[in-house]
Structure formats: C-alpha cells, structure tokens
Image 1: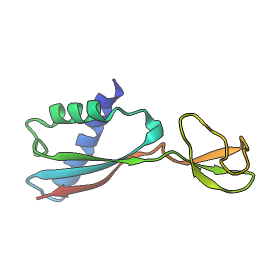
Image 2: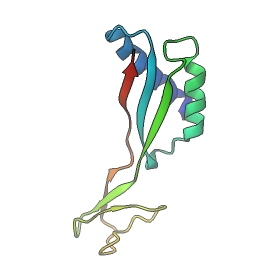
Image 3: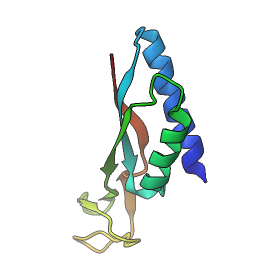
Image 4: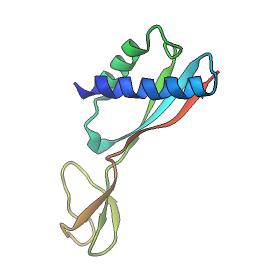
Length: 113
C-alpha cells in the first residue's frame, strides 16, 4: 500500500515546515494529486490520520485536489483531457501524445497556527 508511505512523507514535510516557522499546530494540508498517480484517496486519508496522531498535525484536515490527466497532441498541438486509457487526440486522432498533467503529487500549501 503506497498510500502509507505517501502519507508519511506528506506528514514529514508538513512537520518540517511547521517547525521552520515555529508553528504550534497544523490545521490544513492541501495536496494536489494527479488522476494518473493511482492514489486511493480514502486510503491516503486513513493513513494520514493514523500517522498524524500524537503530532501537531493530529487535528489537521487533508484536503485533496484532483488534477485531471491532460495530454498535448504532437501533431495538432491540441490540449485535451484523457479519459479512461483513451490516449488518442480528440481532434486529429493521433497517437502522438505527451502527458502534461495528471501525474503530479505535491503539497500545494500548509496552514499553520
């Protein structure tokens, strides 16, 4: 279950930033997760809640923002949302696609007190 290691890493980063700013509490961690990462939201939230117990983030909310899988056609330059393993340009039907969004996973911001 890679959601557990992701949750641990998110918590570690948030705690380090909170320490850097001498915060007493972390109230919110906003995370951007690409659709193509395969991360299970419920499992990530469950793991985060477990790992954050006993830390200054134990009451923190984990807000997940989903990033859609976007492709850019090398033939016609159209940017489009890729749906369910349909890696074909929606305009010219080319298979020459570059993924430009949807593989990301990062902390967008952290709210502290």
